[in-house]
Image (tube, rainbow over all chains, first blue to last red):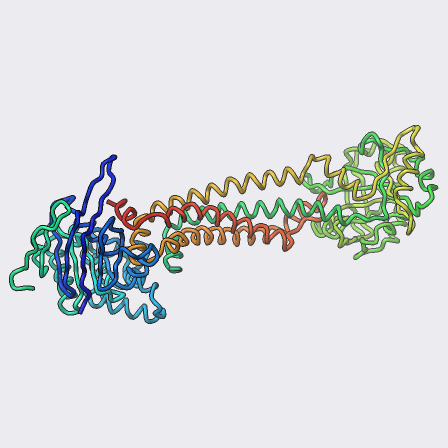
Length: 232
Length: 389
């Protein structure tokens, strides 16, 4: 069973033009492990900030961010980096593949932080690429791939180290409808077949429809949590 | 360290990387050459013999001393042999653009005073026997394809023949010197040939001696000889200055100015310029890769690792430049040594010169990489990813 995510009284504020902007305000949220969540809300509601806190990319001002039994707010910079390397995979809207590396090398990149041998890394990267249906595109550079293929490489990179949590920030924002559906189906597969906990930020109700549950945020506070019909 | 990424980042921008490597290579090459010149000067001075003194006019090296001084100087206690040296300043007729030094000397005392010189072809005895004979360095002979017995026509510029024809010297001996004190591209001929030509009206020019070389007997105090010779002509007709061979060489070099300082200044300016070129490259690389750095941090690479990636890239570029520059230097060493043999017989790369070139490249790479590396290390993943939009 994948690890549960808990946010306990989490507050996060930014300074903008001399004013304090409270992005997350005493947020209380618990997400079950092995569940596909969509995170929705208007711009500035704190979606990406929440994603960054859960992914260990940012620190909460107050409160606790628990992933499994690890309180991320207690970890320092290099400890968080080590934690990210083994426990969380990111999928970004702009794909964010390294342009000088091939698809296989991009997927291998996070595996360099593991004790695996070069051969094992290569094999694991190839398995991840085959899983996302890109077994025949391993030696292609990102510029030689379509947007959908790039995003699938990014998903393969996110799951290469076999993390329990996958965080996706608008993963279909740059894709056409058909391609977006294929990517969302892939995320759904990862959740259903591999039991990954997925937290996906999206503005797109259709994309949110692939999730088990939809969390609504508004002005840094938790709104309602919907369960998609036929799921959960 | 993701080595593959490091290498791909370098080869991913071939033009920029090649230009940077090329700039570092040229700088390292220049620094190596300048250092080799400075070391060559030092080697030449260090190789000077301790038992040879040189007597020149106290006014200037370009003012001749009277011939009559020879006997008087030879009588100074401790002087074992004396040899005239007269700068001829001629041009080899077949090579209008080429230059090599020619000196009129006393054949009997010359070679015995320079044990570092060995006759490798022909015979020094033949040189002594023939008035018009000459003894040339092996590099000079090889350069022009000269053989023993061949006649070499030289047009005089200071000493011109009255019949308008060039001077003709027959090669009787070819020498080689392993010491930077004597180069292998000089022509020595009998001073008496010059003197007789001038005295008999076959040639025109000043009749005098540029420098007297004194070989001291073993155990002689050079200072005492110097003082005795200088005192001998204190009241004229021509005051003299007696120096050790090393001091004479030093003064000769200093006529060109403070060469070592000048070379160091040029080297410093080159390094300064190249440092900013590499720094600029690395800052551009760092800014271009902001997004990549953010992605790497999100994947779990530490701040230190991402910073070190840029430092390592800078070191790699400079290391490649250093290798190319040193390789270029080694290729150019022999032609340079031949070209500078007349005035800088000690030119050559030694281990220290090569290490200096490599060390400077590494230092430039390190310093130029630290600034973008620090920026990369301090950048948060969120800020880096946000910069992309």
